[in-house]
Image (cartoon, rainbow over all chains, first blue to last red; front, side, top):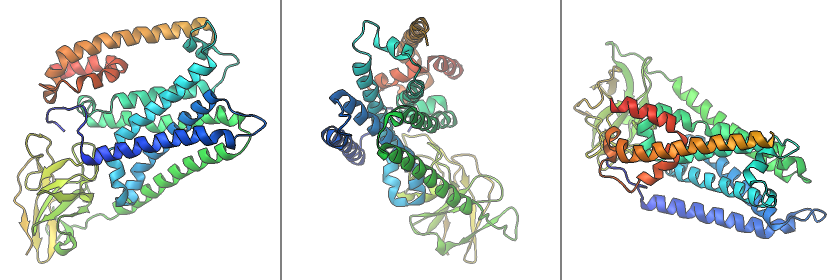
Length: 343
Length: 69
């Protein structure tokens, strides 16, 4: 947020998240090193360095798959939202696992000649296409990890930052190509191919399911009220106390209508941080709280509480009978609109 | 890729990184406070920015110029 920056805004939830992640990765790598020799083809026993590079490589692939699955999972099931809160730490850990994989490769395959290992990697013959795929993915992962601090979001602007971080999908495609042209070519059993295919298929299925669900929801345009430009936002009792409903006018952004202590307030559905869906959040400590990263805004004017400075567009509401009407024209961000008491 | 091409590529990457280090340090010391009010008085987080500054220094120079106007 726009208060003074800190290296990491630690909370108990973030500490627990990171502890579980680190423990899971350490357990995975140790298990791989321990069980790998027993599971390998006895005719082609694996040496320790090869096991280590495969352990880190597969850990990075699985972490990357998880990082990309969290977004659609959180859209499909709110119980997965806590996985989203600290996803950038997951991304940084993925990058570290990929770097460990690369370091293990350089320390084994290219460490025993007078040629510098990076020169040997790039100029190795015959040409191995999986090397540029892997290097490309590693470069993207490093770039995304290096720009994961909130400073970069503000410095590059949220749309540019978001576009940059969408390149994680390109990194995933490069990793699949890296595995496909590399480890899969030498694999003697179908396990690796199955894991890669199942992971990629799972990601595609999750994104399609989340996309279809959002498309169905977007199809529900709010009908016009008898008096233009107002639109009908549904009955007031349909809005849960401490929660919101999301209304989609014919034109403009979706609007989140919150109910808090029997009064209704409307703000844009897009969080000023990363366009998170505010309407899926809750009122916490009297403030709208984004479900993605916990950014907060006051109900009456859409302003983040001091010392933060983010502001949301607000909207006018009125109640006619038991029905809530919404003026879909946004007020300038931070405009105070008196909440409407539910009759 | 020939050995010469690989060496040239790595030399170019090294030069890019050296420029990035210089720009990054200059930005952290002289530019950051001017372009982002939330960075004023905050120092502990600055080393975390260095890898990104090193990788994106041409973009950093452009944004620095735009934001400093």
